[in-house]
Amino acid sequence: MLIQRLIQSIRNIPGAILRLLRAVLLPIVLRASGTGTVVLQHRPNCPASPTSPRMECASSSTILLPSGPHVDPADNLSPSMPSVVYAPDTPPATQRVTPVRTLNIIPAAPEQIQRYLRRKPIEKKANERNIDAGKLDYSEKTPGVWKRIVHPEGARYFFNPHKQVFTDIDLTERNLVEINQCINFLREEENRVVPGSPFEETLTQLVIQLDEKDGNRKWLYYFSNHETRVVFWIDEFETTKLSAFDDLQSVTAVSHIGYAIEFQYWLHCEQYPSCDSVSQEHVTEFCGMIAHACADRGTSEAPLSTLSESQLANLLTLAPYLQSRVGVIDEYALWVIARVMGIFASMRFYNFYGQPGARLEADSSIYIGGENGDGRSVLFAPLDMFLFYMPSAHIKELKGIWVDNLINYARWEVLSRKLSSEWTGFTIYSTVMLVVDVSFLLVPGVDNGDVGSQSVPTIVIYMSLLSIGGSLLSSILLARRWRAQDHSAAGAALFMYSMTQWGGFKALGIMHSLPFALLTWAYVLDVILRERSRLTGLQVDSLPIGIILRHFRIE
Image 1: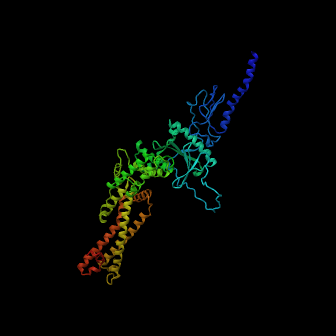
Image 2: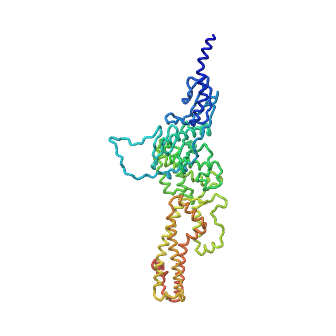
């Protein structure tokens, strides 16, 4: 009996030494490889078949790699990826270890993923590559399970269907290692921050981008959820990072903020249109919004829609095509839906849709005392009367398109075309009157060359010439200034902001009224000269106003 116990003790020595080595050396090795915090688990009764494929069972300790549907053996995981080892006598299902943030991972919005600004210029060099004989496949290879997808606009991006991840980053060896680190960290944190995350149902997707400005590698990320049409983050996100919050004040309601987040979601779908299939709900909502906006624009004096009638009509013609793509992943169809739905989500946010003080007409302000007023001015009233009340008329038109420092681009286009047409007509009339006045001054005896002894008709003609020249010059400058601005909503907003900053609406109204007012004064001066000529016996038909009236068969 004593001999058997001695033999059994000798057999247990290697096991005890092995357990001691594992307990002492394993944490040191893992820490040296950058795997983070290590906790040992003693498991005397190891199950014959582990419940997780990632669990390696041992007699003394168990090491469990990050589990979940987002971890796949085909993704070339780096050996340096964080490992999690659970505490003694604690089941893995109930123990969670917070992953370590080893990279500079920063939350970002879809509008901050600036694909258009990150385009790489191509170096010019000779084309020296030949085509192999019998080549049938021209697709580019991608590492692992990553898929290369081309956006309808031409941009290239990559998609990992196992982990539901999108990225525009070049899949180099270094980038792949850090991408996998980001994915594992973010997915683990998602499960912690969002309990019961619907990732297993492929409803949440992850977007990762790399920002290397100033030599620092910053990893930008955001999650998207197709069921709720939102983007979200595992960190607290500052709304000041969204451009929409720079344009509005008093945004406090959660439902109101939701429209800004929905706009970011549609922007995500616009940038990655292969992210979801076209649903019947998409098409129904698309057609309903377009139909309502079309009817509102045709029956309302101040419609809220920023799309013109022709744009809305053209969009409605796409409804049959979109309906035929229901249930299919079609990048073109989803891009169209995302672009239009994003416009309406943005419009709802700016108009306080669903809030007590919602904007119901495009030319009304939502703020107290926010009617774009410039205050009272003592000089404006007489100047307005001197310019035939044209500044007041222009101010009213400008306030209808620039409300609360926001531009209504559809109304802007209508006003822009109207002003351009008016200024072109003023230029023609001014040119005709300028030629006639100069011709009248060339008549012998009208201008004797002595400045101090000029007749009244000659002085009136010179005043008329000054008015005509001012009208002609102001028409040309204003038309050039309006045509030079960028033909987009952003360009129109920047133009109106810069024009109203230095003088407000009153100065802008006076400036826009100069072509008409100065040309009108030229006509008034010529009428005065004509009436005086009747009394003095001069030939009326030889005067500028007489020539113009006779030319247009008015007299």
